[in-house]
Amino acid sequence: MEFKDDATAFNGAKHAQFADKGRMNQALSVLLMQVLEDAGVPTHFVRQLDEIRTIVKNVEIIKVEVVVRNVAAGSLCQRTWFEEGAPLKEPLVEWFLKDDALGDPMINDDHARAMKLATSEELAFLRSEALRINEVLKPFFLKAGLKLIDFKLEFGRLASDPKTIILADEITPDTCRLWDVESGEKMDKDRFRRDLGNVMESYAEVLKRAEHAVHR
Amino acid sequence: MEFKDDATAFNGAKHAQFADKGRMNQALSVLLMQVLEDAGVPTHFVRQLDEIRTIVKNVEIIKVEVVVRNVAAGSLCQRTWFEEGAPLKEPLVEWFLKDDALGDPMINDDHARAMKLATSEELAFLRSEALRINEVLKPFFLKAGLKLIDFKLEFGRLASDPKTIILADEITPDTCRLWDVESGEKMDKDRFRRDLGNVMESYAEVLKRAEHAVHR
Image 1: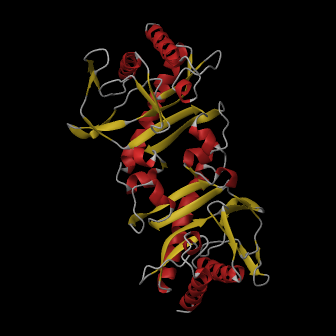
Image 2: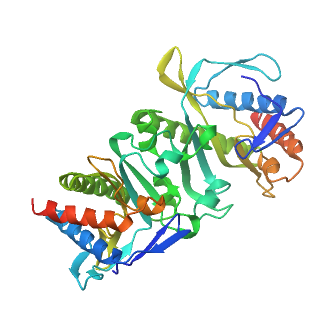
Image 3: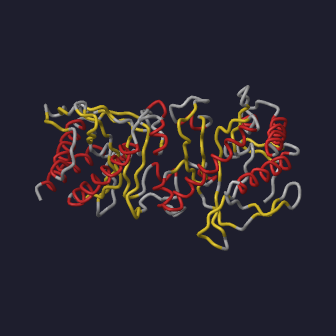
């Protein structure tokens, strides 16, 4: 797995390069994989090869992008009655079909089953595992002074044992929304999406805080 | 409840008037309510007032539009991998938020609960009741030489007893996709949406066939 300096948004319509993004994202993602493994969540992580490449387990990716939301933001606010920043009483889980050509549309369990993306049992596991990951990441980011607003995960079936599904994705400011606990400032890819500036400064700050939090 | 001659499509962007549509739709809908009541499905129907107006029970409408699909068509084919006409192994159920301003977006159980549209128990009931209605309508339309491709339903909580949820919607070629069993010809609102012509001729044919089927 290689972490790139490229940034894309709006299904590829907007793109840019940010020096050092790949290195910082890998450092954060590797750190978070360790936090998750320590909490008993199996991940695809094997070992770091260099600053931007990680050896990961061989999996068949499940074509369901799993989104967990703690606070309303982004597309949820365009699609529903929630205003940005509205806390959700319970974490909300969404499935999106992993298909760029279709623009990763939202799907439900029936669609996932009908397209043979996953069985009912696998979908139930994806849901419970994503919520479990949320329960690990939420308090960890809080220690880093960051509110975990929402995040996207992909999972995969182990090539050596397809019945075993593991987390097989990066976890970075590209795939999570993270807001500063005090100021509410956005510290994630929304800085790029919405042209808020200081994109890499925020990514660096998130990494720095996470590195401190892991030692506390 | 009044059945109008107006036709709208694409969330109101396209509209027209069709003489006699209201009368024909009411006649078909009343007939189908009777078919459903006879099969033990409670509906909002009380009695016909005149050719275009029906007295219905007082309900609080649940803001979840329930779609049941037997064959892929319409928006499903834009959003997923199914080609129009592809049979679905099992009926597929979708929820849409009843909100014209938002364009009736698709939602899932978590959204419905978070927006307090319905409880988990109510959603489970909507699903099972919609599938039960499908199992009544599918063979009925087949007797009429029509394939029930998909349909949209709304439900409501009885004003006099909000714990009781009943079907509270029309069932017409405006809300169902119906294809001729032999030719595959579309006999529903898609004739209007896609400018296929003979819109009212098809609605009249559906009504005529349903009236014959009910006596068989």
